[in-house]
Length: 265
Image 1 (cartoon, rainbow, N blue to C red):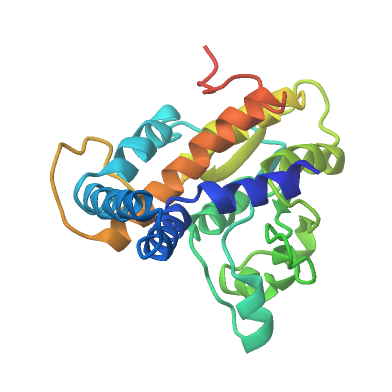
Image 2: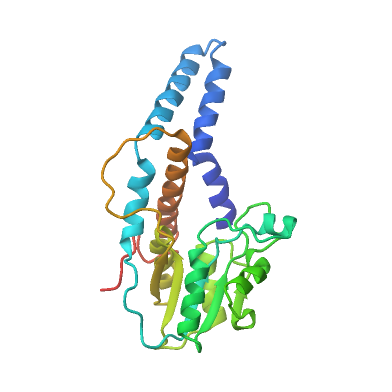
């Protein structure tokens, strides 16, 4: 139920969708007796679009997320297992075209390959189902074979979770698969902007992991600069707003241990 609600809610609060809905409603009302409301909506869309195209809202939202957990410079001597969260491959295009289609965040898998060679005895888990509300027929974990071959990853060594649809299910499903023992060291690999919510969710599931953030999109010390691109502005705003709303709703529904999880200690 939570999964369905989150998808429906995001459809209506997605800034791009809001902009389009406001524009369409404003245009429809303008020739009617509610023309004042229509003109107000049209004016709102223009001002909103100008602000999004000019101001770096996405950067302001994403930067604190990416800076929350530092890059791991010193790895543990012993690692019992490594978990990588999905979001690397577009499984629908991959299945339809018969060729691997990388959707983004490929560092999640390249770093898994590096760590797998460093820790040859560690268990490996890849957690990725389908996050699409109406497309549960193809799972990401089921189409990764060619990419494992490219990265020289032994597919027989990797435990696949193809059922998880969101971060909460990633945490609960991988914990069941791994059945970690007290004192074991497990590394969690995911994109830096997604790491706070991931860590909080895994902790809430009773699993203290070593955060290993990858897939950074910002330098970390960006100053204030203006640009003009509505597409770029909307993409950044969508990405950042989606993650912050995820943190808030996970906290409100008891799926994370903190509204903005921080490194231990």
